[in-house]
Length: 151
Image (cartoon, rainbow, N blue to C red; front, top):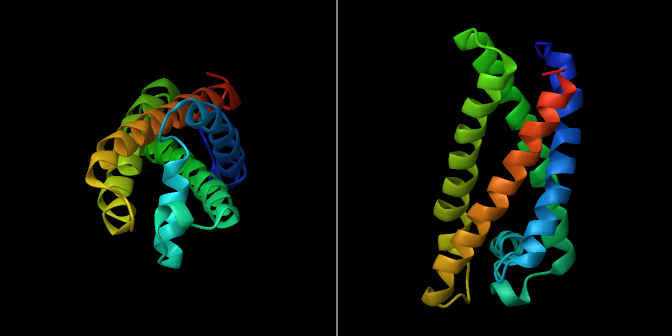
C-alpha cells in the first residue's frame, strides 16, 4: 500500500480522470439523456440553447472537466488519508462519496438551472442520467487509484 505524494498525485490525477471519463462515455452513450450534460455546459458557456450548443466545445469541456475531476479525486483521496490516518481503501470510499456529491450537486445547481431551451420534463431525466454517469466515473476512478497505489 502506497500513500500518494503531491507529485505522484499531480501525475496520477489527469490519467485517472481520462480513464474514468472514457468509461463514463460508455455509460452516457447508453442513457437517453447521457450526452446532454456536456451540451448543457457548452450551451451555458456560449449562451445558446442546449440542443444548439457547439458539439466540439461540449466534447472539449467534457474531457477537460474529466481530467480536472481526476485531479480532485486523487487530491481528496490523499487528503482523507492524511487527515483521518486511514488506508487507501477507506480513503477511496470517503473521497468517492464526497466526489459524487460534488459532481452531481455542482451540475444540478450551477449549469443545469442556467441552461436554455430545456423543457421542465427533461430536467429530472437529465439529472438522473448525470448521476449514473458520475457514479460510473467515480467507480472507475476509485479502481484506478486503488490499483495505482497497490491496494
